[in-house]
Image 1 (cartoon, rainbow, N blue to C red):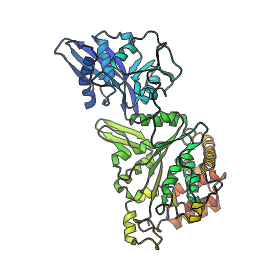
Image 2 (cartoon, rainbow, N blue to C red; image 1 turned 90 degrees about the vertical axis):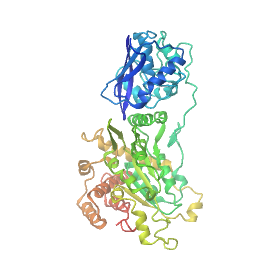
Image 3 (cartoon, rainbow, N blue to C red; image 1 turned 90 degrees about the horizontal axis):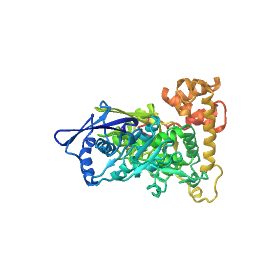
Image 4 (cartoon, rainbow, N blue to C red; image 1 turned 120 degrees about the vertical axis):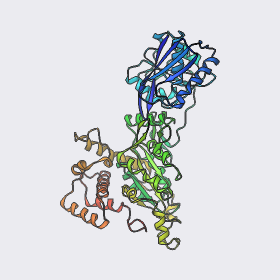
Length: 539
């Protein structure tokens, strides 16, 4: 007796459809599983055997051989439990072959026969839809996430008994796009689930107001707000330096309030990353804001960039299309920070393992905050007692290549009492006004890049421009070019930092509504560079 069940597999963020082939034949009773399987997949045979017994389904005294193809790809995860159990039931004749045609099944089994949630359901259902399958049977707790995919019929189940009932259903009703599958008169079991919270993200209400910190709550720091608007408009990396209590962390947490909403493609891509990581993903497709990830300075390299025995996305991938905030930058281990050099340039992370190469996207905006010295008050010698050597050692934990990749540097000073206690709201400093300016600048960028067939659909932000785009969209007049040459020599810029300065100047011109980059934007971009030499150890 032979049966085959369609399921899915994950390799990093790449999904593929897999086939579970089950053969029951005479021989020594037992379950043998093959197909280049990981340890958790091999352990599924014990979970399945006990789950079937506790569900009052007797296994025949036969030899059961299970093959999961393609056998050339390494299999990991627990979502093979349910399709293997379905294959055994089909091989015994409890499920007819036509009942499992064009149906993808995925889920983990408990020893009592319950179906438990798995990670990566969203990309698996997307792959099933791309391959033209008609139905997906998933754990009930994953159904809310699976419903984000339109154009495919879904059913959430809680037990092996419900699996048999779902496959044997005859009177099926096609739901509205993205809705659940239910029998007439039968209530969808997951529709009363409470809404999940999505930590690390801020949300917009239906009216478009942001639920979170607002720039209007920050008193003073107008220069830092201008730098934050430029960073949000061009998706530039930003560094804030200042004494404790100056508002660096609060300003960073206000950044999501002025970032433009994600496109449908960005939402789906980000939600898939969170689904593979085993985190709630639904909020990204239901009006949630961009990701905001703030790891602690004790974070390990694997947690930051991804990896592990079973590779998972790291913080840089969870911040994809959003903000990665590193508070107390100088407290991070230098080796950990240097792991960011490749993702910052290539916008992705490659993890090499014996089981294959895993690639995770990592196109994020890096925002960092730090104190200028161990006590935090340098160069105010009325309060700072750190020696130049102590300051240099403190800052030496940040390598030059990381600092060179920072497009903007905002120096934040201590806020005066009058500005701190002022009750009057200053015009143009709240999130609503800054968000409007950022969106206008983004629209100018989109129109500019859509006008060029070479950049159409490939580049959306000024920070993504390469050498060709710099020559075309950042062309300078003779006077501006001579001014840039003086800046280059005075600041000792590298080729990379000079190109970054031009990209920032282009963004500042977009914020100002200027068609061409002028000396004003070049001068402001130069002022927003890291003040090399001001702090010992940065020269």
